[in-house]
Image (tube, protein in one colour):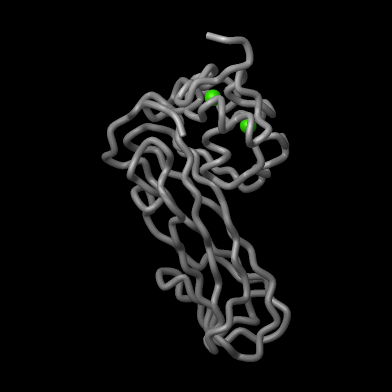
Length: 204
Ligand SMILES: [Ca+2]
Ligand SMILES: [Ca+2]
């Protein structure tokens, strides 16, 4: 092979991103995780985060679910509103599939609830299971929770990440909040910084 020549389909660091596309994107073709933030270059490209900026993804948006049959995860969502008697309802939406699988955050999703309001007296009715606060008046902080469970999936012994969105809609149809977070599913004995990411065969 000639020096500096990257044949198509060559993936020197084995992260699933071909050398040629790494050069194009400005990532290091010899380093699976160019910015050393724990997320491989391919995973970052697929998630839409920046593979050369270590603060992307923002760790505050990363939530880890362990690969264990009884493992659960609660993701808190807080929204500040100024109500005039409307209802505010939360909704969960999975965004895309992880690189190496056809599954999505929906495969681990176990529900969303309305948890608390502050001050609680500003809410007429808290309908937990419907993820809805009814008749909200005044400045109020609304607390929702998105719940995940590992459930009956088979452990894969490699890490994968799924993005999802949580949105809160007012009863007049207006979107009042929308937050994008990451669900990371991780084997029991691994850590984000040193773990093995699931990687598809071949490269893109
Ligand atoms: Ca690569
Ligand atoms: Ca990275």
